Image (cartoon, rainbow, N blue to C red; front, side, top):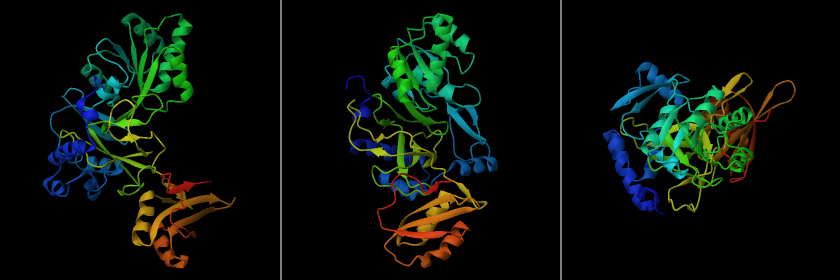
Length: 387
């Protein structure tokens, strides 16, 4: 375990005590009073991208969220505005670079965008924090990327999983030797096994990490194809899509993140991504929660008979009837019109008692199927569009 941050190997109790203390310092006094453990986060509301965008429009630039020490400003589609701070490794990606064995002896070619969005700055800040030199390449102009990688002696790549392949292919076409590149940290897209193996065949060890423009670094690989380890500066919850209710361990749900960042204190930010907690500890010696990686999108809003139905509405339906344990909507098309089937996990036997709530909450009529508790898939899907 030599070389690891001591926080990465601490006990679960020590981690929780430290994170709760940090969290309380960045909450409002009323919210802080409700928190004595990480489980108490479920008492606080979820913050969704749509709500953040609306709040920013009403209270620019950051929706009334108290910020401090902000030195950089960014815009992501939506639009949503994100701040960047002056501190070293402000977005906390250094742990992912260290796990990829990128450090003081490396020259890293950072092909994440420096335009509008914070990705380029995120990885540059982390690279500087681990002592690496950074070529601020950004994406595109692949032939120039090849020339610069050769001339600057680049040893490590940061960017999307597929763009490294484009650079290597162009280098082969140009007859340029880029064999000094032996490390890669990728994000922003799927890393397919064949792609990772292709890099390995060229002597490049490729790991991936997971983060967003809003909350920064969330989790990272330390071993290829192993579960991702949650960053020490982020609190992660997995909840039923459309709610703030935690799922059972191992079940797929939406990823909520509370970054421990008093400069920009987002709380229970809904990423819109699906994942699951993987039990057990990593062989690398780190002891934090592990995630199963990206399992799809939680925003399952679907138009049925011309009306949008959203996960939040499904959650509201469940909340109206304590006898419903779980609900799932399946949408099909019979060749002429949409068909909606509402499956309800319940011990109730009379489906008619739920008809009024379905019409009121979903604004649609649909068939109802009562199923035994525990019989619906635990895959994070609450609206299955089967058309």
